[in-house]
Length: 108
Image 1 (cartoon, rainbow, N blue to C red):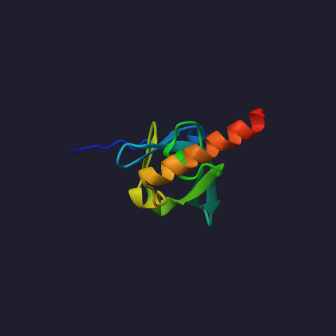
Image 2: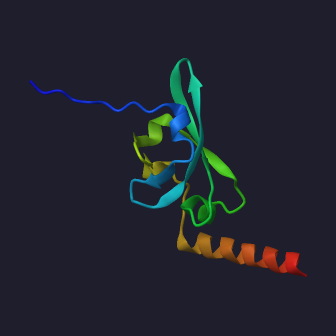
């Protein structure tokens, strides 16, 4: 006879957990979870410094990821790569140039 233990995690415990893509890229942090009809509907992920989300969407404060795109929740949350907006190194370079230009304008 084999007994399996299942660890249950409450929504309150997920706040602040780091979110990674299934490819291992740091995506952001869990800000809150949404419940609809007694089921988890989705997750609000906030953009943090050096996260993939901040590189892809520099002006965004965060995104909402549907529960169906979450692969696992434990010490961290793992999301499907399909949840990540289209991203190329060229986009990252353009966003960094914009941030640099905005910083220079603020300094003047």
